[in-house]
Length: 294
Image 1 (cartoon, one colour):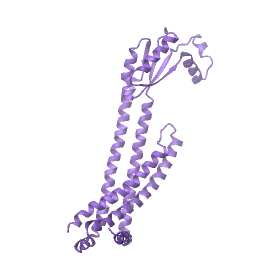
Image 2 (tube, helix red, strand yellow):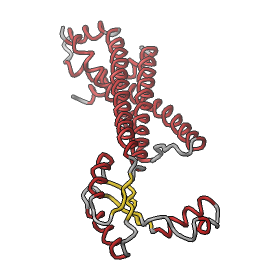
Image 3 (cartoon, one colour):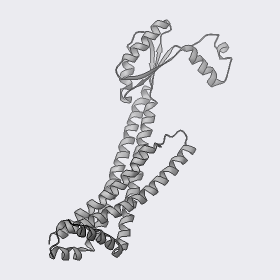
Image 4 (cartoon, helix red, strand yellow):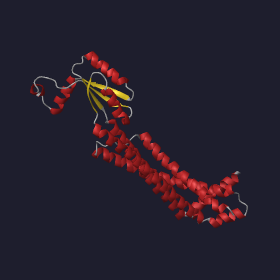
């Protein structure tokens, strides 16, 4: 393809956008709306996954040691727990620290006197597992270790919580999938309308001997350009909207974890531009097929 042909193609892209200003605007708005919906659904999925991970990170196993164990035996018990497969981290909480924490939480200095100058708390290990799905399995194995008096891990809470977090992730994935398909359909329909309005022009170019590639390139570049503009507008809307919403949630619902990693957000916004351009070019290519068969 010579320089004259390349120059003609770019001029044709500009002329086409000017001649079909309303259709071009409709294409840009379609891409923008579709990418806004897709971007919003992606951020919903990210935050749903983040919320699920936060819930799962709260799952822990409390291992209480027998009162008859000395310091060496308690230390050995900790080593045994740490060596179990599936265990991520363990934290030792001595009985003295447990009593101090209770005194601090109740803001009272007379608790020791009230309970007869004795410490009712046993030494404890707080255990976190690698996979939350393995909490019950790890707890069952810890129970069998010598020196363990009791193991508490919220048996009645763990299973419903894990089911909820799994549902949350699936719901987010399904929503993203549905909106992605809807975005593709909307953009493709708009591009087909654009191409259909210029079918006579395509047929004439084909009849005078223009190659399929020569006819196709202006439409592909136009689709890329309109997809780029629509994607950038979507990035502006989604970026500003998510930033405002994230700040609002952090200020009003401080307990709610919100995705705010700059790099991750940048990747999502950048992908919206690329997806908009890709769909614009792909839609143009697919829509042209029937009109190139003359």
